[in-house]
Amino acid sequence: MNSLKNAAGYAALAVLVAGCATTSGTSDKVTYDNTIRQLVETRCYTCHGPQAPSMVEFKKDDVGFKAKSLGPRMDSYENLLVMVNGTDTGAIMRRLDDGTNTKDKKPGNMYEQLGADDAERAANLARFKRWVGSWNLKKNNDISDEERKAVLAPRS
Ligand code: HEC
Image (tube, helix red, strand yellow):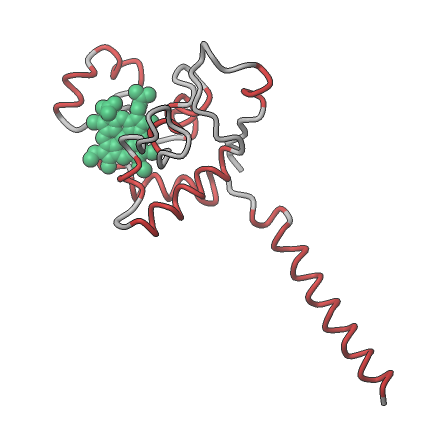
């Protein structure tokens, strides 16, 4: 009787362990393809979609584009990466941070775009953080090679 009960217990435990293995494994890795593309389309495209200028165009007339509520284009993985680990390294992190890591302890000016309320903003910030891997706010001139390598932001 007792051993039967144990066997059932072990079987249940095995199912539980197997379940944990899948949730902590590759299946919950945050990638551009499985999470970030959709998130950017929903929350950022009004001003950073295909109609927006490339980073090079934007830099030539940032005041003009800002007046039209347009920021640099994030319509592809490559264009988004420019602001994660490219010519504008750390821009995504500086603008989206909730104030925990900024110098003045104020949220970045795009933080509010992450969601309609605090809960949604926090959840979407967590997604961005997991995607980036190492949430580093440093600019190109300040970031070390080691720190740059820790910035992951995988496509898939
Ligand atoms: C209502 C329009 C609007 C929305 C929505 C918006 N942004 Fe912006 N964003 C701008 C404008 C305009 C600028 C350029 C002015 C500035 O630098 O603040 C900008 C600038 C930025 C920059 C700095 C780019 C650089 O390197 O100079 C980043 C990064 C950024 N936005 C990220 C985001 C992200 C991520 C989202 C979505 C979660 C988002 N923004 C949603 C309007 C918007």
